[in-house]
Length: 77
Image (cartoon, rainbow, N blue to C red; front, side, top):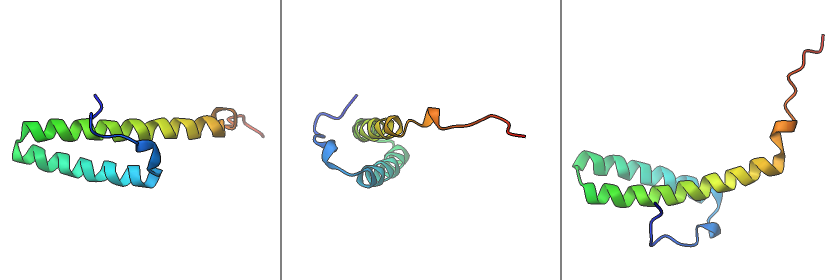
């Protein structure tokens, strides 16, 4: 589930998305150690929003590169 108050992730760069994902992951582990279920839920929703946008962009990059056609596995002896 996406976080309802996170908008305009399209404006962020891939590096900003990666940094935010790392920060949220750290905060999630801290919230889990504190055993704070409401905070854990909020961080998980935010993390899911950022990961979704990051994965969507990475999929677009891989499609543009057309990697599946560039891998050569033939044996050239």
